[in-house]
Image (spheres, rainbow, N blue to C red):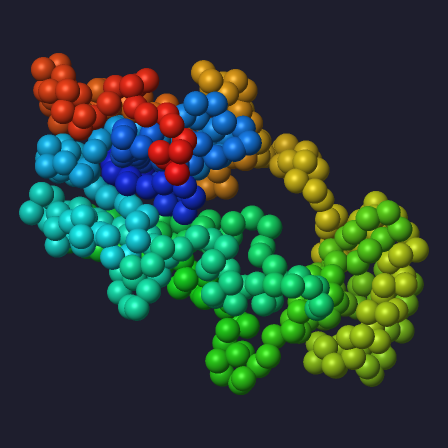
Length: 411
């Protein structure tokens, strides 16, 4: 058995985070992802994100673009559109993360491309979608976290609005787009007809409010920020400060609460009428947490981890990023990969979580700017040396090393 998507070809007009993250999920599963990069602006702006950047390559770019191929192409010219159509003719998906009003203007929708390839799937990932009053507005992860209400839920009760640590809107929007592309691909292969996918970061972020949004919409619930990253309603389900650090305890079932009471030496708490059920623990959380805070402060993090794991209470240490990458579970499952880059030297990054089948997915560096232009235009479009020279002369494509590497242009 090969990789699940090794017979799929994706043309990606993308840059920065969400779009490249979406298609990297497909490239990690074996799809051939051909990244179209504008040579006049130095390609994907992600190539120039500091601090670890050299010319047109950066560790930021590596994190979103492994296992892909790069073709330089100016889509603003009629000759560039012709080249693009020749690629689409032999592709399965066209993926792009542009403002919601641009796909129709740039003729990237299924309606525009179905005459070129009736089976093509066209996936738009934008801030607000292709319709509605904000379709023409651009958006970034931080903005959407504010608009979608995430920041109002994050942080301590008296802190200003806070974003999540990672750029979770970009990442979750990318995952939603990847799922949409796979679903649309299945339909196209079954029916012989492609379609549009219209994915928005805002809708992805709203969907991840899940039960909190349901409570608010259905019962006028007012979410409250909880100290120490506590759950909205389940108690205890939060961080606790130990003598030398932090642990996170998750009593999401009554049996875990009873086990915790025994493990901390207070079995009577389980029968206390104030704490006997989910509902009353939520009502009396301040009384309960005052007791638990005092108990957890008496021992070290390691002591609590050992005690609670033995008692079969869900518990984890609160790591920093370096500690997380060294976790024995991460190491045991080869969770950090390593490869050599011609400019950046040794690059280590987190492996894909997509473990499908028995064959390990490929793990190759991200492409250099335009690295595969000549190879793929020859193999896919049948262009010979003379055609390539004409396209270079017309500034439609650029050979590797000839594209602008001016980060100010890329920005």
